[in-house]
Image (cartoon, rainbow, N blue to C red; front, side):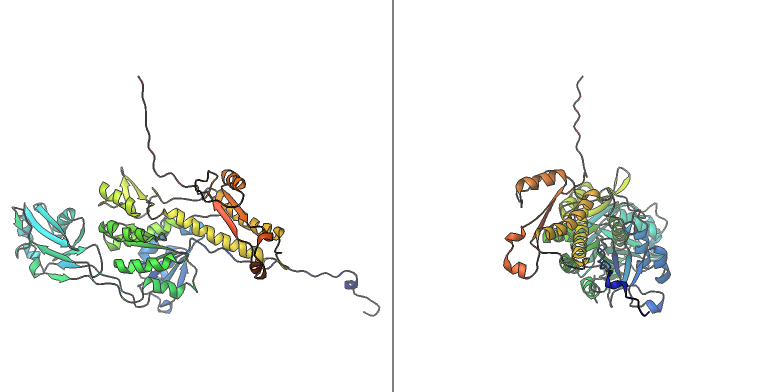
Length: 494
């Protein structure tokens, strides 16, 4: 309007919003790589993300590994959703599981009556090169081939015995080309040799050698998807030979991920679990559940669902997997005291009954799961905090002590959160390695549980200043740890 002068001549206002930052990577997001085919052809080859088992059941066939594993994951309380995690299911490309060696009898349904007359049978199994000589087998109470199979299974904990109406199959719990089963007459026994034609007739049976996995490897699937999908926990429905597990483990160790791998044989404690521990691959969790690959796979899914459940933004939410119960999973009946102690040495986690109470035994020889898990959560939180402090300014963060104090304060807030959730706690520093002011170091660890230090800006090299790089920030933190066992001594005086 003529004669009107804009107020901006006097008061000029500009409004600037705070730039958006990034969210922390969710440490509870789990991916399941599967060989199953979805029921909806439109989903073939497409990755999908789920927050409930019912959603999974809509897309994948009932009875498939994928549905069974999803049920085990979401059946846990708490589970991945407690920490705002999700389950992504991604296809594997032409992948085939490794298989186990086996021997299957011919049709022996006509031999049932003869078998029922055996009171002192003997048979020798050589499984993966180890001999198991079974003596004193008594089938007089058996009414079917399934009963016969069950009696043999009770004497053969290192193999898997299954049956149909007409046959009995004997399989190794291991998979791969080293998985073999050979059957012969028992030695040292005085009873009936069960390999005869009127008994199990294994000489006329079918022998199958184990085979290694083929197609896309789990590590290749991770490499293919890590740029487009966000996840931390990694599982699959693949049964894998030891060499494949070692390759996957080495590749995932270099990534911000945790690899959960099932192991279906007691032999895996001294085998693959020990190999992974000796390799220092603490981001791989070998879960031994000695009821064969299928059962071990579901135990793995349940373990992962329960393990990836911490909301690190809460108070006293940090957890250990030790003594936790897994819903839908029964304790491993084959775990002896000897195997229990061997698992502790190998760093393998197992699921057992302690005086009738089902619980996970979490072992730390390959570090405890909760340490690896919390460290990744802390890393993701510090990355987001540092980036957002630098990003969410419309000017700049000066390369001065006040600028450094602001950046360090962003990290301090994260450390306070991890003390609050009980990942770290005040305590005494027992390592000889310290930095910064020794007195301030000890005071902060004792009173706060952590110490944050940076080299003074004035002492920074000119090359780093030219690169606009902050002086190195060092953080020391004292783990809160966890109590897993206790010794009690009672002195009584009369």
